[in-house]
Length: 457
Image (cartoon, rainbow, N blue to C red; front, side, top):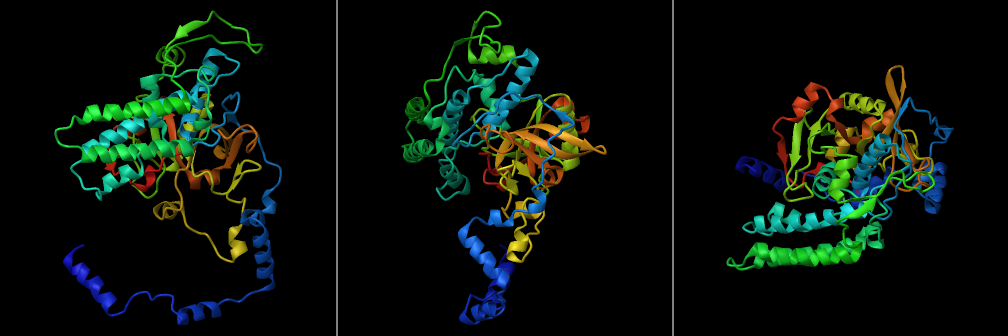
């Protein structure tokens, strides 16, 4: 703060020209402004007995939902991330499985999430430990150092992580490496891994200058690897597989694959170079590319990088992709205005303003800048309904199990899409040359604690 500005602020407080505390006099005036009504008593009794959402449900919006979509990508089977924050991984793999089902005419397909998640956690552990080594000269209260120790590991992520992990480790079918309790319920197990990493981080910072820090880190990673094996199982290195028909009979002779060979043969997408991560963030300049430091899953991988675009441009590419039977990685603030029973995301689902006699009027930019809204969940965008050449309704494949929402899917109005959609990953072939060129610009580097860093869970 400049000296003159500091003096000015100090003078204001010295003169008493500032907001006063909640004194008895102020409290008395606030209480005098209350005008209780019979309706208030009814609302209080209702809120004392149940959740506010039930009371705020807009009955006029409870009619039969229109489930027809003009364009839709074929989907077979709903996945379930259960008590884990791996929506980003489920979404990335669900997009790829839809492609594999379509291209190889399969009855169904699901990839092993725990296989890739094992390496995700190991890579993040290495990223943290190496970042601690890289920042050893900084004080513990340095903001980057603080952030590292606050976030040594997470089960959240972005498409960038999916791309780096698959490129390095490949994929395997779900039946080859099965989920465990720890992978389906990550909170407690991950908290123990994080505790160990923080302990290791402190040891690295306190180590003597003559210590071989890389050898020390390697021993630490061996312990983390052992913990992951106990929790998730040993990652498969080779397996035998062939597609089956609806009766479970092999359609071809089973072959032996490594996870990398399997991915190359059945998919082979260049996930880092053929896809663009797009964002709609009205708090920042559009048509600019941004990158977030330390927001990556592997130390030698890629930071999260995105192009910030107006909604109209993002929708155009989304529709083009869906028309071509290609799902998209999509993330949003899923908890806002969600009718979980029907699986409907609609701004008209609830009327909280009438309950409390007030308004909730912030726009998208204001919600982001005040931390009221941000990307919280990733899903697979798969369908759109067009009326009068404009999108009016969208559909996503979720990963909360087949009994959640609308048969495992969520439907969203275009108005809701406008307010709470944040990220979309699209293949370059559906983007204009202008978009591709903008994506290739030198990005603006943002710090790891940036508000829009928050990874999907």
